[in-house]
Amino acid sequence: MHHRLSAENVTLRYETRMISRDLSLEVPDRSFTVIVGPNACGKSTLLRALSRLLTPESGRVLLDGKAIHTLPSREVARRLGLLPQSPVAPEGISVADLVARGRFPHQSFLRQWSQGDAAAVAAALRDTGTADLADRPLAELSGGQRQRVWIAMALAQETPILLLDEPTTFLDIVHQVDLLEMLARLNRAGRTVVAVLHELNLAFRYATHLIAMREGQIIATGAPDVIVTEDLIRQVFDLPALVMPDPLTARPMVIPCPRAGDQG
View 1: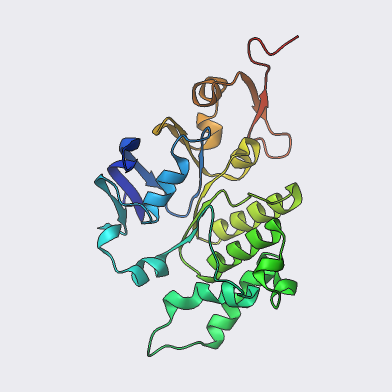
View 2 (view 1 turned 120 degrees about the vertical axis):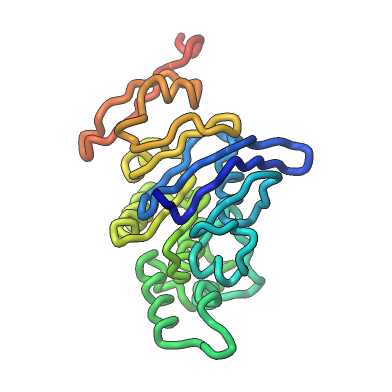
């Protein structure tokens, strides 16, 4: 089966530090794929490679069957949206102007700002609950508000594939759930979503496809209710835990147990 986004035998490193070697994966089309694993296991590095921010030392990332690094930047940006872990905004920019930058890949000398662009920005602001912040300078917002504005910019891009690196960072539990519900709606409407998440029970509740990593390698992939077991949690996180059905969704739910030596 052809997948729009995949990686073939990629080796990833930062200068002298090896992160992953000979990694291969396929992101199922129209899935809500979540990457989980302990800190510094290579989750964000993998997402950076999938988004073309990091060039593999060897192997290749494929977008629509072509090596992503051979495609023009604007063409990639029309197919794949990205929310990186620590985005940087121009000084003094307003919320509305930042979100509008999500429309740049769709514009050219012959196609200037349109009603469709304005509608996409308005929808992104509405869906992230940031419409009332549109005229505010980004720098004046709280961390959680800024995070939602960055997500709005990625949504305004209206790409069929959306990659998000720890999108729930800085968000309280209410906004975490609101965001994941919104991403789930986008997924059900046909968009492929790939996210790095730390909160396991939220990841298992919303993911349709899971990638579990440890020390730069993929330990397991598949539907959460198929692959999430107590053995997997112990293998990936070195954590004894009970796995039982979520009472609301019947998806796997993890209850951590004290590790040896933690009691008493």
